Image (tube, rainbow, N blue to C red; front, side, top):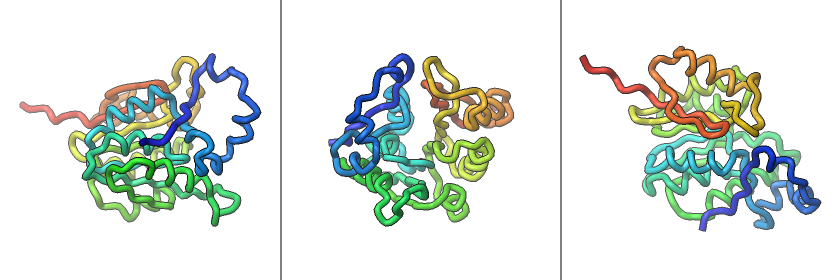
Amino acid sequence: MSARIRFAKTAPNRDVRISGTQRWTAHPVFAWAGLRPVQAQHTEAEHGALEKYGRNRRSAVELGVAEGASAVAIRDVMDPGGTLYLVDPYHLSRVPVLNFLQRAAHRAVSAKSGPKVVWLQEFSYEAADEWSTPIDFLFIDGDHREEAVEQDWKQWSPFLEPGGVAAFHDARVFPGGWTREDHGPVRFVDQVFRTGQESEWTILDEVDSLVVVARRRPTTE
């Protein structure tokens, strides 16, 4: 059985009063212990989009894993013979030897058998420096500063095979959402893909804050 997931809410659902129990169990130790669902940083609709575009992929990379909800979406639908690479430094834990955020993610992703999972506990730019494997799905959800999103794109997009797609999280302002026009992923996607700066790529789909791009097919004369 796949991990239980609590999805991010949009307005007006975000205004619903949070119970004392939910506040008390917010720490990832409770997800690791199985006492609450994994807390997703994306909506249920975005989860469905990740499943749609991650389906049957053989080599996928996710930058920024948190509690692992999005990794679950991708792993659940990938080719069983494929490999999912999960990149996250997990550097914010106050007690690194425990690191319950990382533990919660490992528990969630391993809750169901499927493709091979390779964990890379390092920053995305460090992992990219050592990377050489072609990929067919890329999910960018790490450092949200605009310059960091740009660096992730420049370092990782060359590894995307023809037919591969990339998805940016928190990259679009949407009704009832939490993003703003000045957010790094929003600014990067607007400047690069909506202006045609990346002429080789086109926007394939947009779901809540998620923007999915695909490489244009070469034209034939």
